[in-house]
Length: 85
Image (cartoon, rainbow, N blue to C red; front, side, top):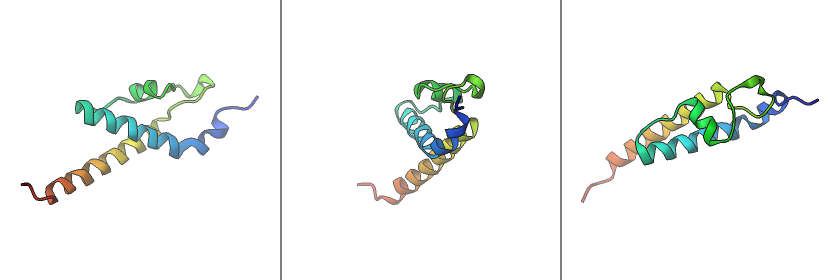
């Protein structure tokens, strides 16, 4: 039987980007940050590594949040550099 862990590294980047997209969208819509379990639920994943199915690793969640913080800083810098009418 093939375990999911065998393929986990191949999907890390995609998973991290999905965490970023889900978190960024939620932040723009409601100004709140989703918890690890909430992001996993939105992606139809579990946070339990031993479940035998695809899971959202805590490290991937945190990498997605780092991308979110970088994007928010970039957007903030851009917002302040654009002249207001």
